[in-house]
Image (cartoon, rainbow, N blue to C red; front, side, top):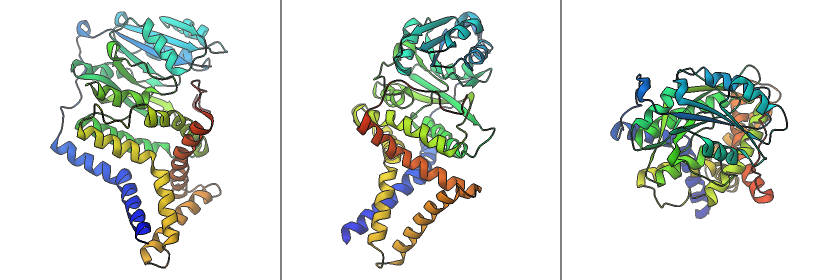
Amino acid sequence: MTALVVSFWVCVGLLVYTHAGYALLLALLARLHRRPGPQTPDDDDRTLPSVSVIVAAYAEEEVIAARVANLRALDYPQDKLQVIVASDGSPDATAERARAAGADLVLELPRGGKIRAQDAGVQAAAGEIVAFSDANTLWDRDALRHLIAPFADDRVGYACGEVRLLSEQGSNQEGLYWRYEMALRSLESRVRSVTGGNGAIYATRKDTYLVVDPIMGHDLSFPFNMVKRGWLAVYASDARATEKMVPTIEGEFARKRRMMSHTWPIVVRGGMLSPRGYDPLYALMIGSHRVLRYASPFLHAIVLGTSIALLGHGWVYAAALGVQLAVLLAALLAGIAPARPLLIARYYVLTTASLAAGLWDWLARGTPAGWEPAEGTR
């Protein structure tokens, strides 16, 4: 009985902490341990570093021309900007359309996955800074200036910007979650370094670029590895990009499940869990935002099981079981009556389940290096 009670309260406490308490802790730390704010972009074009923007693309003929045109129109000296499209064995006209749109360099590579396409782009890059983006993303005109501004600080090795998710239809609740994630990322950057990035808009110094396992995406593997090597990994909130969100919650579940099949290898064998290279503060941030968040489906399962086992031993366990069943019921009803509270419940249940599903996929079948464009985001 004692073990059940302890398990229940420990898991409840960890869930509350990782979803809410961590944000409050960061807000407090940001007031006590604040680093200088974002760098102001340099207005003197003569002192700006050269930048190579690399777009890894697979079967992106519908959007690649717009992506290249968007990069060509950036407010950045054209003689210091190189646009590289790395076509990862695309079976369509991606490469031809990228050339016609004005890409400086188009690499036609055998299919090896996004990471290897990005590696090839970096090898061919002429810029001091290498920046990365997805084919379905559009950057604000001043995004690149804001993205490279943090590199004026010699301690910065990685910077990521803000991606805004656009929804023209559907009922995906990703925007709510993503705004919360951006707030956490901003606080992490102010306190120490970010614990994760995004593939829509980020950059590194060319000489700090890391070659990682092809199944391990840059979004998660770069920030903590930069910190381990003595660099800062920061969030440039004014470097803004936009992309379409997956239109349905079910589609978002599939996308996150696929992402987590790439994430778990990083967590388990990619060095994230090793404390070597972490200071205590950053170790706390990794444990709070990443490890506990990814463990949340298993914590929920323990809370559910112990709530059932402890029925009759106090009203709190009956109440906890009632809340959990209500959330599950709301998630089911959202398919019939798409009201906002029900959709939020469905989003939470399915995205939490995707963490465990991604682990299962990796353990059961392994994770391929290749990728397919997410349906509805082009």
